[in-house]
Image (cartoon, rainbow, N blue to C red; front, top):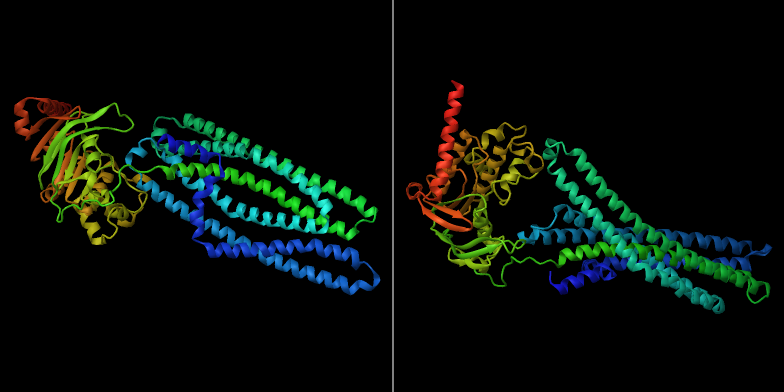
Amino acid sequence: MSEQASAETRKSRTSLRALLPLVPYARRYKGRIAAALAALIVASAATLTVPAAVRRMIDFGFSSDSQGLINTYFTGMVLVVGVLAVASGCRYFLVMTIGERIVADLRADLFAHLARLDAAFYDTAKTGELVSRLTADTTQMKSAFGSSASIALRNLFMFIGAIGMMIYTSPKLSGLVLVAIPIIVFPLVASGRSVRNRSREAQDKLADATAFAGENLGAVRTMQAFVAELATVSRFTVAVEASYKAARDATAARSILTAVAIFLAFSSVVAVLWLGAHDVLAGRITGGLLSQFVLSAVLGASALGQLSEVWSELSAAAGAGGRIAELLSVQPTIVARAKPQSLPVPPRGEVAFEAVRFAYPTRPEGVVVENLSFSVRPGETVAIVGPSGAGKSTVFQLLMRFYDPVQGRILIDGVDLRAADPKELRHRMALVPQDPVIFGASVAENIRYGRNDASDADVRAAAEQAAAADFIAALPEGFETRIGERGVTLSGGQRQRLAIARALLKDSPVLLLDEATSALDAENETLVQAALDNIMKTRTTLVIAHRLATVLSADRILVMDQGRIVEEGTHASLVAKDGLYARLARLQFETGAAALSEAFKAAE
């Protein structure tokens, strides 16, 4: 983010303006908000009629001939209470459901925003912290907009109405109360920033703990394999304790603020009551009038006290709002132009890199790809090989436009990737990564991922092509078997075959294979490779491989080293050159042959 954006973010952390992102969502439900306000006004008005009724009972109702009048008063009060109850119930239902609806919309939009952010953002972001903002922070805002907003408006109306009745009843006593109001309100405003900062710190600590827990539970087998449970639990306990202390400090600040406000509010009522009692004794006002004034003052003081609590909650919600505003302010760098250039139809599957230079945004000084140029003809199979760190996987990252090159350009079917719509571009490619991502859903849903309209027959056909049909049939519910988070119930080879089936079902003109068969045993690798060979004949294929035996049949082999192509040719021609490829081939084939010979000798 720029310095200006950072300044705005810091400002949002300490201002209730951080809650403004909710306003557009609230506008969608104007009718329900108006109904809630109407119920709120009716409930407040019903409450404010009680002091007037009490005054009349005290001044005119306590005599032997006024029994009928007392019955009338109490009957009227029951009706008022009934109106109050119905109005309060309607207000609660409307306000709470509006809050739930608004925050549900906010969560959906926030998740959609996160889904649009590019790879550079996720290079540094912690998934657990993002989940915390998506859940805990939005829940905090739901509380603010739901119950807190309802209580705030109700008490605001009550406070204004009570002040009005007090002025009508006794301008003299009201003047004394109004002098005390600034003394009560000042601590609320003065301490609001402290409460917001402490609440934000508590949310940050909770997000850190959530991120740590998510990361380690996702790797629970590694944790247990290294007997790291005790150390991990200890670190999480420290994180949770830090979160608790931050939350305790925030709560303490809110408690002190509430206590001070309530003490000042009710102390002013006591002082006014003392003065009013002297006026009654002097005959300047009646006992009923004083009772009406005191009840109005108590309602006003109560409303002001509850407003102090709500102010604290809104201040805490502003901290959560600031965190959400930070996410919403992040804009993806990989976006479609206002008028993107359409890719040719039908697709040809032609790929070209032209003098491409690239460094990852998190390490701008470390150039990963330098002056990289090559082209792949439609329907050609090209293998990319080289030592670890040569930049092979980065080629795929750039080709799918997860990043843009620093210099040079990349084209597909003659169109610069920057000019094309990224979604249209990615529809034309199917990726099988070395470490496949399997979701905690059914087998069929995993294969269908990225092509939800595929029929069951298409899913089965893709599974058969990927040599996955047999192990799927052996699962308890076949294609409907749920396979656990990250496919934890499957072997590495089974996960790899599901990823291959997913790519085959997508049926894109460009196929990207990043060590696609690395997790398969010899028998299944032969089956899958045969299926891939048939499919590769009808589309452009780029293959990244460390095991050179899997790329012997490639039309061309590109040898990369330190981000550059240092050799190019077929397997036979590259071996004849006796360069880097020949050295890698000797290391693999000769070492493999030696190991196999030793195994045979041991068996004898």
